Length: 234
Image (cartoon, rainbow, N blue to C red; front, side, top):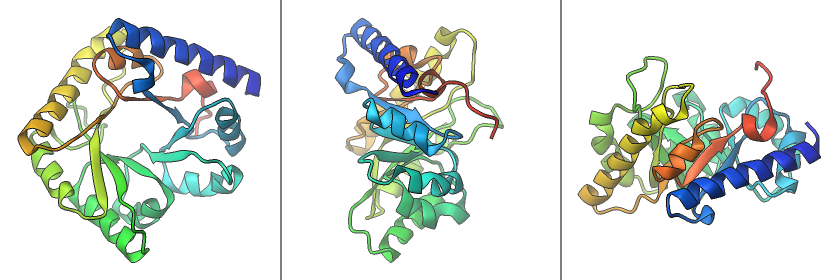
């Protein structure tokens, strides 16, 4: 994909974000765009950075390790948005600015310990991924287990719990996923009130449904295809 087309795609995405935000009585500046760069090469990330994207999401630790050299010098934030296996936590704790898919206390504890062992003083931002639909193929903590997991993560000194993330079922009609986004917002609001904690982040919505997510309170949207084009089958 050429830089011109990435720029044009970004402009279209920004217009969609602005319309959705205005429809919800919000400001477009409240929403962070995460460019989902999984399976796309480092030069595509550079092209997106050069036209203004500052947050990027990767699915796999090992894929990001292979691409890092090609992104040196970019003052971007790197998010792990895919499921994190426990044996990858040490590397992930050092490679990413945010782990947006924590769904298990053992993984959170490993991240906390890895940051300590690496001598990293700053806190690692984490989001809890919630399974908002009963799909066996989806990762995420069960809704009933969310309060307990959140409470335990808050006690980890080197992690900063910033909010929640979800991946709803893919439905052709974007409006059909609205209920899942509403559910995540309600869960976040319940934790905020119940534990008296600030959880400002709701990461929800992708290329085909992020307008609905914004209308329901998304503060971060994860956009891949609409920005970079169709991914290769990696």
